[in-house]
Length: 185
DNA sequence: AAAGAGTCCAACCGCGACCAG
DNA sequence: CCTGGTCGCGGTTGGACTCTT
Image (cartoon, rainbow, N blue to C red; front, side, top):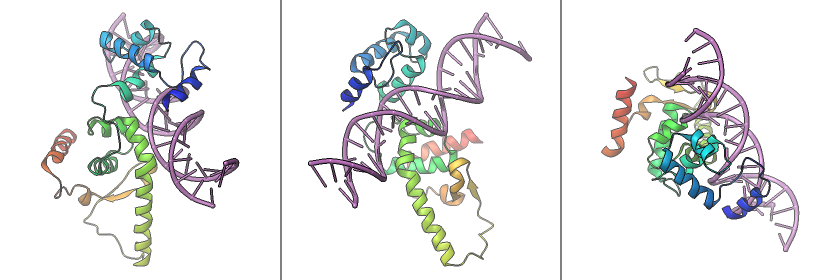
């Protein structure tokens, strides 16, 4: 499938290659990264005959060629983790990706937009209907704090106590939480 | 079978942070 | 400090694929 895309896009290239990467380009990039390391993107872009800009090289490496990239659908555990982390961090995709080994920020961002944001919208609708049904007048429990994020998070209001309730979590999942809390404090 | 709508994903763009000189 | 170069991040777009009518 990618190949058809590639052929079409290749036809329009001029000095700077744009569009999908070919297998050959991937190979060259991987070689260059091996030589220069995954930091010297300017060097990699200029010393190879890829005719790609440094950003493009970096992106390709980070999102596709990097070792240990996990492909395929998200597990329930990963999905749950993303939800929690997004509530905590907002649209800090790279930070969220850092907590999900093998997943890229781009992948998580895409997954969020196509799956999770809708899920949340639906569940929020459900909640607001419920609240309307049970009458709006009552105040929320003042002992419970809620957090509201920016931009699209502004739609998301959540309960901190629920968020930090890891009673059902297995120990390995909890490891990062404690580290994270340490870091933040 | 065809057309239109919706979904998914790779890639690009613009901006800000960081750092060396 | 200031400036220019480089890198990383988040938002957005484009196009192929899939589903629905």
